[in-house]
Length: 455
Image 1 (cartoon, rainbow, N blue to C red):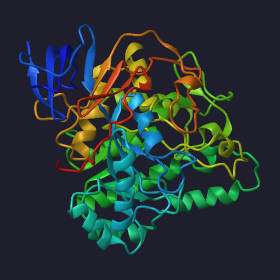
Image 2: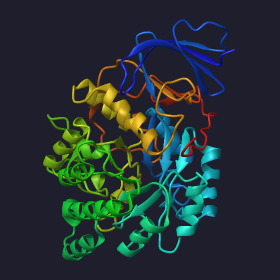
Image 3: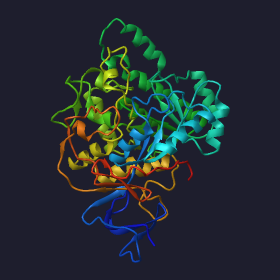
Image 4: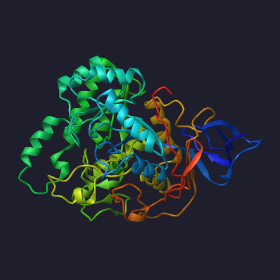
């Protein structure tokens, strides 16, 4: 007996034509995709006239637990993820304590296993002298990757060039990188220190990112290690990576991520909170959009859209990094960097589909298929027999402004408030169980499972 049959679903893939079929689920896995599913089922749901896509894999979240539950924890962050169509998250290591050892990794896994409403993976952080611990977590297939901070950001993790070289030489597996050159950031922090509220894009300028990306390319060329560059934000970075990868994109094992805030937010025009512009961008003032790397000027924002459209970007990750409104209201030099975003990623991209900027097939590539490939998640990223039954049902609602009532994450604000966008999905399934509908959690007893590379 099937646990669930979703009937007459119009299934969306990144590279294959859409087709209408039934999706049959047993024990959390898709066991049949085809016409006229016969046989008994504990539940049948009609998706007639609706689109069904794989659940979003967000390879870049900061759920703040352990250490900072007033900002977010695994329960609140995973509810937010599920409400927006994200069924798998990969959590970054800059928590308190940071995820540097097997013990710290196990501590975080226990929290996630108990509280997460979606599937989860856990990055291990890089720091000097920890390479044996990193290799143990990578060789066991437990950690989803090694996170490296070339530039100081939120938390204590930062590596110098000598440590970075040793990581390339002595560790194994995927390296994910926050690519900003720290020596440039140090100079600009000193130069701008007397300014009460400087432009964050000046304090952490585009050149810091391009220098770091150029250095990464040198190291990949020397060691042929797979590297995933997080949150590309400038045209110059994209050009460097594209030139290095070559015409067939396979010359070097480099993949890239972009975040929705670098597609939709602009540093050029001030406004309070988020307000839409005619071209679909949103501007916001001061600390509300203080994030690392910074929100760039509008020329870079437009260039990043072009990179997405021209297949130059491999994945989209939210870099969900919530801070409270009180923390964001502090003076510039005290206010933390980071913005929430896990629950608005898919609605923003579906809005771009509605506006004709990209296709839904491209969204599936960026948010489902390519993240599954990059992180080695063999049973995710597609609606296919043998894959996990994580999928999202989409209706055709009208655009409407995002309001605070739509926001599920703990800090309860978004830089996109007021922006007209496609509402959250009609239904979100994790392992074949309906966890969210129209942006609200409908089964709070659902728990995700650990997602491991190769599984």
